Length: 419
Image 1 (cartoon, rainbow, N blue to C red):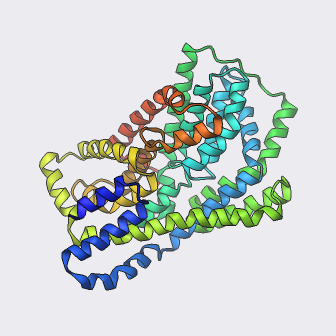
Image 2: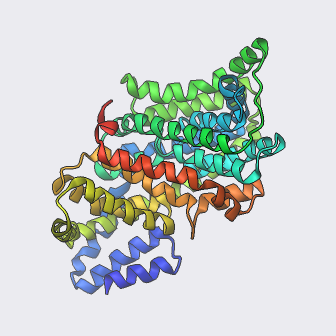
Image 3: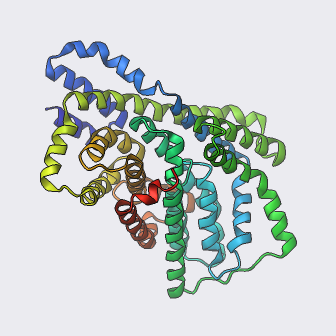
């Protein structure tokens, strides 16, 4: 009966946090072991009693301050310096700017919203097909969960009890591989379509663009550099990054007004609380899952299907692709990690860092795939292009991500080399 309650609530569009909490409560009621009610609140609190989770509101705050502080346009201009002169240069600029943003925001949905407003009108104005412009921008948002910092990595690190800094480092090579695959996709499309010719900046203009963007570059340097050199934890790096974003947006670019900070903090608190509550509910659900020995039962079943780690990851990738189509990436990660991670590690001896990178990238694909496809609708709302038009132009990028997923699943060294 408990699985039926879970499925009914899920497809009734009940918020995933409530689905997890109510399913756990129903299980306790159904099992008759009412003494577990006494531990319910304790387990929920234990789920958020983790220092690493402080990084989530701090990264969200950094993204909000960046959006308000005028850093996006300056990063786009900096990207123009490096790739703007190539044919189809604005498409390359779009991706390079998305890489810069991914190293700051850490959330695919937020990045798609910000970059769609900035890049799609500019590309359309220069003669690019609106569907291709929106698709390129939406695909660039997929870099956010892999290139550090990543909100999904923070949550996975807490659930898997792994150092979040090491997870960030594990995402560097996969993130660069995925960005490289997107550049190849654009180059191949450019052979078929006649992209507008790019134009290189003059030296004075290029130097001025780099100078204007330099303060914004301090943010990813503070985050990634602090972690790589052991100067700060991910949470401390996120705090430093938010302070830099405030100082740059207020003191240097002068686009953040003191009057705007109250509303900005409220948005940050609202978005953070949604994620934190989801994690608390997931901890209760995971407690029930472990109590019921679900991972052990599923592992026994999968062991009869295959003993090969790569085949197991292929099965997981196919299943999670469908899960990601229906459930938000963060919610899905919270839901499946307590179930699948013990199987991956104990039964198939899969490195937990590789597993985290693979499932995080897989789940975020759901942002851009129907029937839910939240990222598609965000890109559509911000650009004015119909979701189906975006999806029709998006398939080469989705194919590239699929190939990257297969490569990352087969070669664990790509996720573990730098750790």
